[in-house]
Amino acid sequence: MKLQQVLSHVRKAVDDYHMIQEGDRIAIGISGGKDSLTLLYAMNALKRFYPESFEIRAVTVDLGFKNLKLDKLQEFCRNLGVEYTIVNTDISQIVFEERREDNPCSLCSKMRKGALNQAIKEAGCNKVAYAHHKDDVVETMLMSLIYEGRFHTFAPVTYLDRMDLTVIRPLIYMNEADVIGFVNKYAVPVVKSPCPADGHTRREYVKDMLRQLNLENPGVKERMFTAVRTGNMKGWVEYLGSNKVK
Image (cartoon, rainbow, N blue to C red; front, side, top):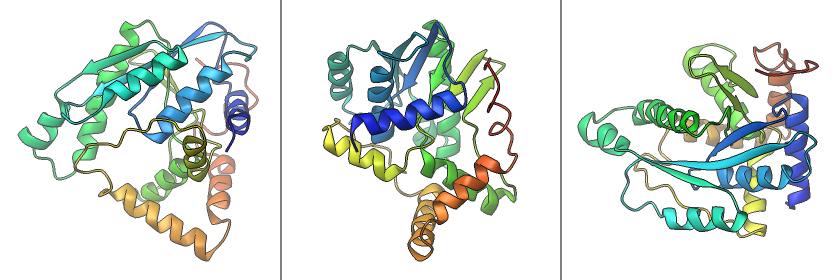
């Protein structure tokens, strides 16, 4: 997928849900994975022509895994001309050695987001961009149905009142396959996750399920995404047609 196509998806999501306002300082959390690096690349390109001027900076929460190659991310941000901050933590030690969690992803996610949000506020940013794409939207909805018994997924825009911080998700109109095509075409330096739980989670199970469903019923993922957009789910309806986001 070409950059112009990625920008088209991102611009539409940003406009539909009024994700960006004049003067925003937006932090982009980058893990080194394909999704977050695609988002950083796209947002850096978008700010050059978007009618509302905004700033971006990249932030990585280092979980403490010794074999995470952050030098590649530093070089990538330097080449883009984007300010980059690394937040050092001992989250991996707490989750895998001290607590030995049966479900490590839940605790890790909470601690990682806490560290990220704190760093973002200290940097003077008022928004943070997460790299959730269309597949993530549908997978989260399926996980909620299967494991919680409710029709729910994250919203395109979420205001965190305790942090006075707004979360935006500009990749929600992009398919994961398009992200893969983009990073391959532009040789984006993806860094493999060193987490021992990577690829062995409930989300991976649901991802495989969705892939099989879409093979057997072509277009089912798109129909599920449409159901999310039009199903009166909180956060998916009220921003459309509004003029501003906190």
